[in-house]
Image (cartoon, rainbow, N blue to C red; front, side):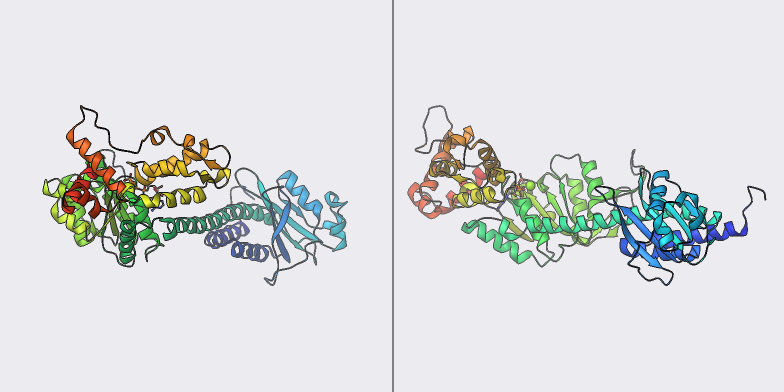
Length: 500
Ligand SMILES: Nc1ncnc2c1ncn2[C@@H]1O[C@H](COP(=O)(O)OP(=O)(O)OP(=O)(O)O)[C@@H](O)[C@H]1O
Ligand SMILES: [Mg+2]
């Protein structure tokens, strides 16, 4: 026979392998994959039974993953199978064929072959690119010479395909499990009990958060840096009906216009130099879910116009594309500047402002909710895994007083960082004033200083905030004491907030 010509058996085998590859590559559940794989091998090789062993991750011991018979039933007892056969294949890494096990000299010491009267055996290693991961085995107890050399080649090819399919299915299963547990973890993190605070201004904001959960209306979250804008945006997503879809965020501050547009809307191949392939934008990627536009006030006018289209018509158009596609995305945006002022001063489109701001949630700065400081400290001490390494620490009264006096320009983020610092510094189980960061420790509560050379504005601000603190945050009382109207007080506070 010419070595280059295929016999009809070869062709049958190739066809069978092709069909088998289609079946096993379409199964992603590992259990189902093993059963189907085994049944296919048994029937293609006219075997009586078949077994797959895989090596355990740790010690590399073989354990049975599937054992089946010709009737496509699971079999329990694989003890009669020769250990010598398995060891020989593991060591050589090659397929073993024996047409009469009883007289095969390689198996002369193999008691079990004789014991259970196994006649024909075919066994191949399952190997990935790096190592042997297991074995596939078929046998026949009734007759000798069941398997031929062609069958040996067939099983070798089959084992190669099976090893890849097993690896894919195992990886898929692991990723699926990991994905489920990560989703649960994320959802847990954004449960409402992790949004800590009891101050009326904070509770009012939370009340709004609850009201917008079930709808898809755009929400604008305003507040100083570190007040929890992103955390609230995520809480809205992970507690609402879109929780199983994606939450994607884009920071819009200080990004070149073209870069931001290609991130948000994607681009078509050839739209600009370097656009070598079509790219999906984040709006499309977030379809069905929520999109968080962070630091929205910095968006350039041309991008504002494109964003308006998304909000008005639910349509996105990739850069360089003539066609648009529809997306269903809930939009939450955030800013720490006064967006209305930007509108008045012509930096931000008014129509876009009203589209984004269907519901506006304002998060109060920490210095206006000082009563929440002890609560937040406790929360971080108990729940921040990095802080808890020493066990749950206590805070000495004097240290807590200092924390409550500090103005916290960086708000909750700054408090959280300070807690991490203090937890590292603390000796024993209590945080003392000496463990506080220097800038917090050195804040001296008391009357504002009137050192000559400071501006009227600075002195006024300090005096006003000190009075507000003395009045326990009661704005009406503060205004009375200062002899100004409540409106003026509120105006000044807002002004300070925007110019920290
Ligand atoms: N109410 C809260 N309870 C507990 N932790 C909070 C709360 N609000 C914010 N945090 C925490 O404070 C940190 C800052 O929050 P976040 O990033 O949401 O603030 P931000 O307003 O988006 O800040 P920036 O304007 O700087 O982007 C985060 O680690 C968040 O987990
Ligand atoms: Mg943020």
